[in-house]
Image (cartoon, rainbow, N blue to C red; front, top):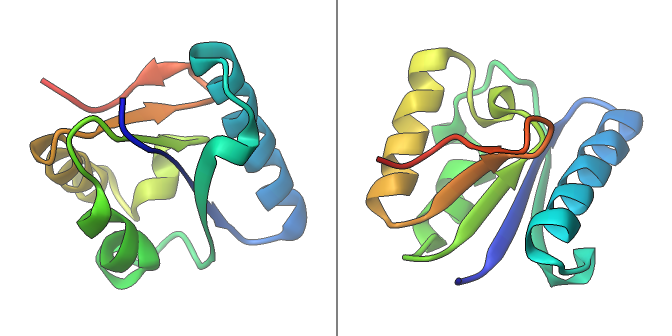
Length: 111
């Protein structure tokens, strides 16, 4: 396994805290590691902004590598629409990364 990334897209501090807690719990349960081993990218950005115009697309996606894991609290945090989220997941999968939705405890990327 490569690096573990957590992505948080939030509107309020309370929203940020809830998402981080969900990701931390998922990582602890699935991988047995503490939150200190997660590299977080947190963005206070409106959900209708495309991932391409966020740090998610400009910073995080380019550095994903084979074996890396990206965890979001909910898939809707990845983009402004279902087709846009699907495109992001396709790019992440093509790079060999796995994407998980913490609240559902399920993998949302891959073939």
